[in-house]
Amino acid sequence: MKRLEEFRIYYNHTIHPELMRLERKRKRLLLLLFASVFFFTAILFLQFYLHILAISLFLMIPFGFYITFILYRIRRFKTTFKPHIVNLILDFIDDSLNFGTLKYHSKRFISKDRFLASKIFKTEAPQYQGEDHISGKIGELDFEMCELDVREFSKVRNRLNYVFKGVFMHTTFNRELRGEIIILPDAFKQYLSRTIKSFNSSGGVSIDDVMTERFDEYFMTFATRDANVLALLSEDMQNAIVDFRINSGKELYFSFIGKDIYIGITEPKDILEPYIFKSNVSFELVREFFEDIHVLISIIEEFDKNN
Image (tube, rainbow, N blue to C red; front, side, top):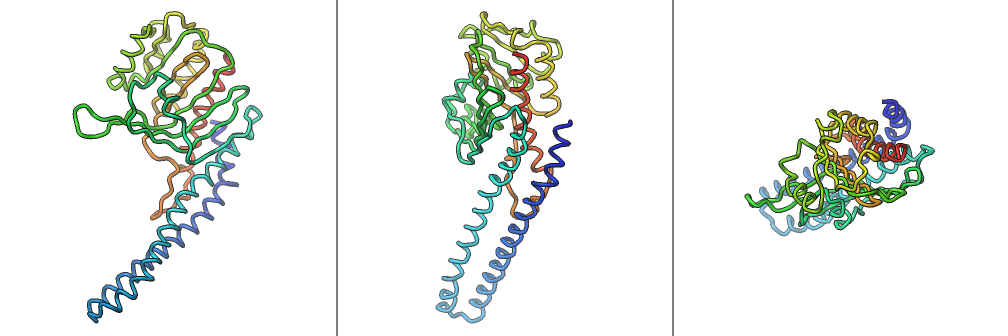
């Protein structure tokens, strides 16, 4: 993929030097942490041999402050690492003529109401967490995306089950779309029965017989009777979606409600979260985040181009 090759060059020239700078900071923190462990062990031995509680307590006071300082530095390293790298990735993406300036806010996320308005997930979503909000323009289309971790209580076991974990995107189309359409991953059919039942009760029907055989291998498609499905999902568009699914190796969700388009891409890992006890200088660590963003943006570009 040409874009990935270009990103690899950008990584070598721009992101890798920043990772090396952050790596030196990580190693300094690790050295301070190990020194703290050594100092704490020394205090324990001192207490064991001298049996002088007052001296041990006196030594523990500054040590307590020191440990608090180290933990603060580690927490700060983890919270600043991702924004540094994400902003560099976005600088690469928005160099394209088709993009406006992309904005990033590490603590923001798409609202629960907006997520549920997609009609992809029928849930109360009692646990709804998000981060890494990115917004901008693709051509004339405004979009926003973020990482989400959505869970609900299991009816069988005393635990929370995943509803969705990955990157979720919302964009507003430049014209009203007729009817409503949802596209669900066939691999997750057993977990989406409530979504299907709810959409069917509001007038949706299965239209798998309208879609291409290749598309049906990976997706279940439902639409209301007034939806102009093939005008939005031409054979070329269906093939493009299947190609994105195969190349990413991740499950995709779509819905088209009025002017709104919603897309979700599953991602089981917390991507671009830094390590403390091993190196973060890795192209693979950065590539995963870039590819998730690139897949979603590429899909919207295809819709923009074909409609």
